[in-house]
Image (cartoon, rainbow, N blue to C red):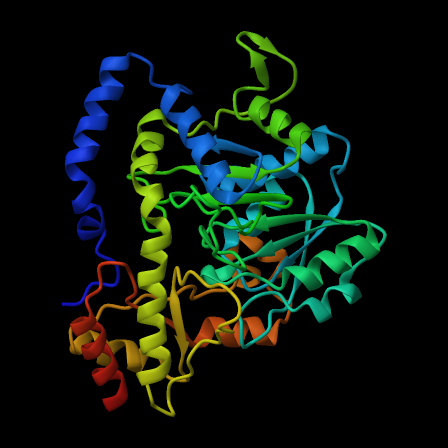
Length: 376
C-alpha cells in the first residue's frame, strides 16, 4: 500500500536526535517557554525574513490571537467584517468567529482554489476592516492584488499560512545564510499564522503553531495574549488565553527546520512529474504557475466521479484523502449559512481528491501512481 502520508518514515531520520533532545529538555527542568522555544522563534523568524515569531499552541490559535491582538491594539473592533475565502478549511473561519468578528465569504478561482481577488471589492462594506488570505494546499494566494485592494480600502491583511511553510516568490539565500531563507515568504510582510500539525510540511510530533510578523506592537500583544494576558508573571494586564508552543515540540521543530527547503523541493519534483505524466481526460490537474512558488502541502486533483476514482486507487493499493468533503458554509456548525450558495466552492468540494505527496515518496511509487491513474 502506498500511504497517503507516511509520518513514521518522515520522522525516522530524526529519531536519534529527537531522543537526545528529549533527554536535554528533561534535564533542563524548564518545560514551558524556555530556551528551545526562544531558539525556534529566532530561527523561524530568520527563516521567514521577518523580525518576530511568537510560538503558540496550534495554527487555529495563531490566527485567533492575531485578530484578538488587533482588537486589543484598537485596529479592529468586535463585530467588524473580515473577508475570507469560502473554499478553505473551517479553521480559517473559526478564528474570525472566536475573535468576535464577522466572516464574509468570497468565492475562489476554480484553477487555483484560492480566493478570487476580482470578487473581493463587491463584498466590502463600511464594516469591512480586514482580509484573511489563505494559501490553500501550499500555493500562495494572489497577494499583490489582495494587498492593492487592502491599501485602497484601508484594510488589514492577515495570512493563513498553515499549509504554506516555506512558500515565497524567490529562493535566493543571502551569502552565509544557506541554512535559512532570506527572501520574504508568506506572512513576512504583515502577520501570518503557521501550523506545525504533524502532517504539515514542517510538522511537530504534536500540535504547535506560530505567528510571524514585522509589527512590534502586534508581536508584543500576542506574546501577552498567549500567556494569560501577562507580560510579567502574576501581573495580568488583559484577558488572555493559555496557548504556548511546547518546549519539546520547539526542540523537535528546530531539528527539522534546516531541511524544510529541501523537503519542499522534493515535493515540487513529485508535483512536476504528476503534472507532466498524468494524462487522463477524467482527471483535472491543479494549476501551477512555475514563476510562483508552491510548496505542495497537498497535490489536489479533481474528478467528476470522485468516489469511483478513490475506490479504484484503493483497490490498486494507493491511499488518497479528500481535502475537504464539506465546504464551511454547509457544515452543521454553520447552520445559519446552510442556505447560502457558492457554486465554485461547492464544485471544488464535490470533486477534489488528494494524491500521495511527501519527501519520502519514492520515484518508483510516483511512477506507479501515474501508471494507475492513466489506466483509469
